[in-house]
Length: 227
Image 1 (tube, helix red, strand yellow):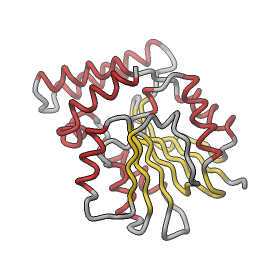
Image 2 (cartoon, one colour; image 1 turned 180 degrees about the vertical axis):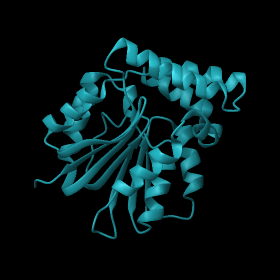
Image 3 (cartoon, helix red, strand yellow; image 1 turned 120 degrees about the horizontal axis):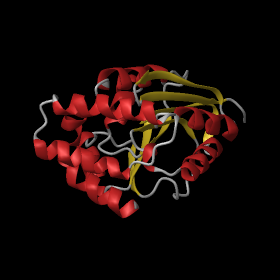
Image 4 (tube, one colour; image 1 turned 90 degrees about the horizontal axis):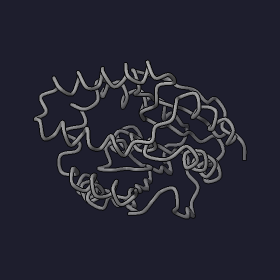
C-alpha cells in the first residue's frame, strides 16, 4: 500500500498545492487555525512535519517561527522535491524520504505537525504512531493534526462524502483532476474523530481536543506536558 501512496502522490506532486485549495472546502480555516495553535514560548523550534508533501503546512509554521529547524518526512520523493524548491534558501530544513511510521527518529521535537496524511494509516498504525510521537516530543510540546475523519455512523459518512463531492464538482477542477482526486480516496483508511482523540489520550497526551471541524475535515490538538 505504501507503494500505491508513493506512486499516486508522485504523479500529482507538480499540481498538488494549486489543487488543494480546490479540493478542501475549508482550506483557509484549516491552515490558519492549525498555525494559530502552534503557540510555543520558544523562538527557535524543532519541528517535525509528518507526510510533509510539498511543505505547505511547514511554510505556515515558518512564517510564524522563521528561526525554526524543520524536518520534513514523506514517502513521496516527488512531493519533497517540490518542498526543496519551496525552501531552497533555507539551510535549517532536513528532508527525509521514508515511511514516517517506521523511521527511527534520533531527535526530540517541540512541535509535530501533519496535514492530510495520517488518514492513510490503519487504526493500529495510528495508535502506534501516536505512541511513538509521544516518545520523541519534548516536555510542553504540541502535536497538531489537520486531517480527515470517518463519520461515526453510515449516515454521517455519506453526508460528508456528498458535501465533498458537490464541492469539488463545482470547484473549477477539470474532469481528470476530479477523477484523480476520487481515485486517491481509495487509499484512505479513515478512523472516527472519537477514536483518534481516545488514542491520543491513551498515548499520554494532555489537552486533547478537536479545535475545528467541517464535515470530515478536522484540526486535532494535543500537548505533551510530562518529561
